[in-house]
Amino acid sequence: MAKFLLILHVLAAVIAIGPVTVAASMFPKTLRRAQSAPGDREALTTLRTLNRICRVYALVGIAVPAFGFATASAMGVLGDAWLIASIVLTTAAAGVLALLILPAQEGALAATGTPASRLVPPSRIAMLTGVFNVLWATVTILMIVRPGSTTGA
Image (cartoon, rainbow, N blue to C red):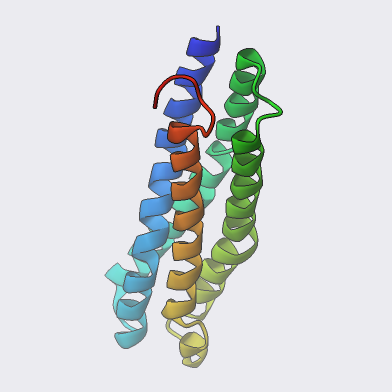
């Protein structure tokens, strides 16, 4: 059962977190293009699509920790330090996405094409996205290396 849950956990991570990471990373560059050419409808459409990908896959991403907890429980590692660190980092990544990146994207979309469009700097969204990506990369490393593991990894 643990192997099956682990497969579901890894698949959920790849399917849910991958698209958010890519779409959120593409958003700032597209926002710069939209801000430099206010009439660029293609850039605005792309921004809306990237934001939608981030919102939808953020919801799908809830499956990642759900399967993760089930897997950890089946493996008997719920109290391990590497897992607790991963839970804390995952919570931080989710908070950065839900409380900072998505609202910043929404604000940028609302302001695009208006005189206020320069008030949402793409560099701030890029920085937040970088923090999000580093958090997820760290969680991935912890999941692979698992300090103290006896698997030899």
